[in-house]
Length: 155
Image 1 (tube, rainbow, N blue to C red):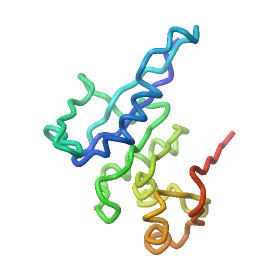
Image 2 (tube, rainbow, N blue to C red):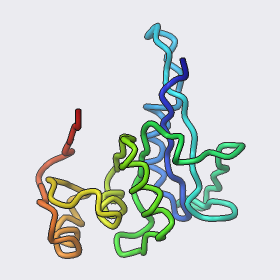
Image 3 (cartoon, helix red, strand yellow):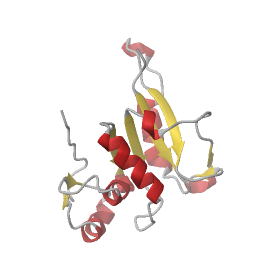
């Protein structure tokens, strides 16, 4: 039986805090728990070397990691709240959602999921600095500005 595959998006101007949290939770093996941990990989949104905030270069997971194989996809922030989300990524996220993959975002990653239409009609949150902008850009969302996180589970 294969481990649950968690794929984190990486992109130019990657938010290092959000990415670091993702790695800490899903990529570090936890033998002390006595359970089989997640398989973790990264998926580059942009071509070429990925340069994160602070000038750090991130090397994608070797081999071909496809969002089509991911059980969970994590969007660790976004390079700018008004930065366009590539159409190819929107289509990939929509396809992953349609096949039942879990998709989540951290902080400004909510703008990516909103651009893909995956949050329409749902309660959502983002970084407190951007809740008003998220509401303006995506009026179909119900913004929860004072929530740390909003979970939506589908059975």
